[in-house]
Image 1 (tube, rainbow, N blue to C red):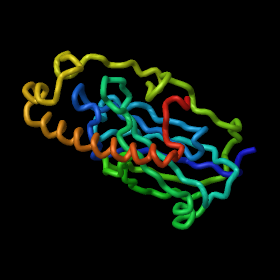
Image 2: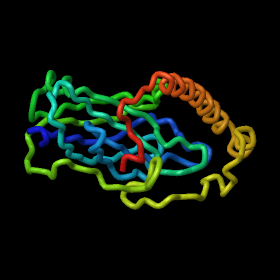
Image 3: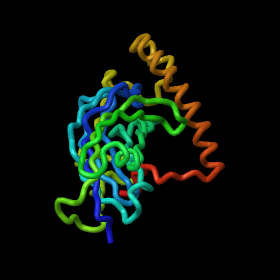
Length: 224
């Protein structure tokens, strides 16, 4: 049996995202939202969003039968692609429902700008949300399951087709940072350096998390 409450989450936009797909083209961002990791839902892909997507989309999420103060809203912003060597997770944010209840209570929307972070803790932009804890306006199936898509890893929500062609003229996916910089100039050098710095930090953090057996119920495309 589910909770007597649900949350309405309006995903407006995100700003200042890092381009995790910089070697092959722009980001194609969408958001995955959940409280219970077994019940996840997602926005559409903003095909033109890149580092500053706009979704302006409202999602309704049933809550598990636990005290509201113990629950946390999770938002992952993800690149909808399967390019070689591109990790699709752009960044993650959290909001404790206790903060919503303390600030506005039940039935009133709370507007927040949440910081998106990599698993390493590095900032990767911000996401703007409006969150309302409310009693259900209709009785949704229990449990609610987000529609399956993609297969293993981060897939393609709502039938989005993979775009294999690089915006850099179809260059091979095995190009090194130095070769790519020769084609696209100083911007690629900066993005390449950022990518390598992020990768080193993320790999180190993920190694520590693996050693500690860390698992926060985060987004995994295999869950769908």
